[in-house]
Image (cartoon, rainbow, N blue to C red; front, side, top):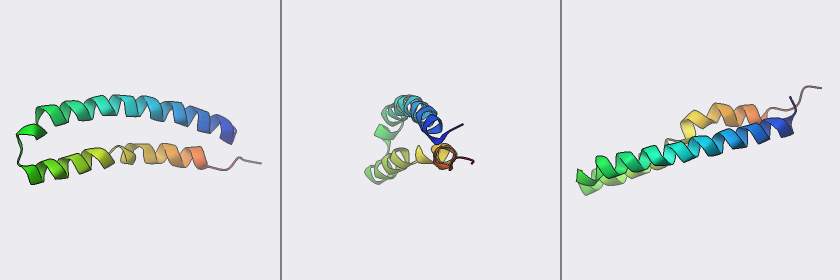
Length: 69
Protein backbone atom coordinates (compact mmCIF):
# COMPACT_ATOMS: atom_id res chain seq x y z
CA UNK A 1 0.00 0.00 0.00
CA UNK A 2 1.37 3.38 -0.93
CA UNK A 3 1.92 6.26 1.45
CA UNK A 4 -0.79 8.36 -0.19
CA UNK A 5 -3.34 5.59 0.34
CA UNK A 6 -2.27 5.10 3.96
CA UNK A 7 -2.59 8.82 4.59
CA UNK A 8 -6.06 8.91 3.05
CA UNK A 9 -7.26 5.94 5.09
CA UNK A 10 -5.61 7.27 8.24
CA UNK A 11 -7.16 10.70 7.81
CA UNK A 12 -10.65 9.25 7.39
CA UNK A 13 -10.20 6.98 10.44
CA UNK A 14 -8.89 9.92 12.50
CA UNK A 15 -11.84 12.11 11.57
CA UNK A 16 -14.32 9.37 12.52
CA UNK A 17 -12.51 8.66 15.79
CA UNK A 18 -12.36 12.35 16.72
CA UNK A 19 -16.06 12.83 15.94
CA UNK A 20 -16.97 10.03 18.37
CA UNK A 21 -14.39 11.15 20.93
CA UNK A 22 -15.80 14.67 20.95
CA UNK A 23 -19.25 13.30 21.77
CA UNK A 24 -17.78 11.13 24.53
CA UNK A 25 -15.76 14.01 26.00
CA UNK A 26 -18.78 16.31 25.97
CA UNK A 27 -20.89 13.70 27.76
CA UNK A 28 -18.23 13.16 30.42
CA UNK A 29 -17.68 16.89 30.88
CA UNK A 30 -21.36 17.68 31.12
CA UNK A 31 -22.21 14.80 33.42
CA UNK A 32 -19.41 14.56 35.93
CA UNK A 33 -16.97 17.43 35.66
CA UNK A 34 -19.42 20.28 36.23
CA UNK A 35 -19.95 19.13 39.83
CA UNK A 36 -16.23 18.96 40.66
CA UNK A 37 -14.18 21.75 42.24
CA UNK A 38 -12.56 24.25 39.85
CA UNK A 39 -8.98 22.88 40.07
CA UNK A 40 -10.26 19.37 39.33
CA UNK A 41 -12.29 20.71 36.40
CA UNK A 42 -9.18 22.33 34.97
CA UNK A 43 -7.20 19.09 35.22
CA UNK A 44 -10.08 17.08 33.74
CA UNK A 45 -10.44 19.42 30.77
CA UNK A 46 -6.70 19.31 30.10
CA UNK A 47 -6.71 15.50 30.24
CA UNK A 48 -9.80 15.24 28.02
CA UNK A 49 -8.23 17.69 25.60
CA UNK A 50 -5.01 15.69 25.23
CA UNK A 51 -5.91 12.02 25.80
CA UNK A 52 -7.32 11.53 22.29
CA UNK A 53 -3.76 11.58 20.95
CA UNK A 54 -2.73 8.34 22.69
CA UNK A 55 -4.96 5.90 20.75
CA UNK A 56 -4.12 7.65 17.46
CA UNK A 57 -0.32 7.44 17.81
CA UNK A 58 -0.04 3.95 16.22
CA UNK A 59 -2.21 5.14 13.33
CA UNK A 60 -0.06 8.23 12.82
CA UNK A 61 3.10 6.09 12.83
CA UNK A 62 1.53 3.72 10.29
CA UNK A 63 0.57 6.62 8.06
CA UNK A 64 4.12 7.98 8.10
CA UNK A 65 5.91 4.75 7.18
CA UNK A 66 7.90 5.08 3.98
CA UNK A 67 6.88 3.05 0.94
CA UNK A 68 8.58 -0.30 0.41
CA UNK A 69 10.68 -0.20 -2.70
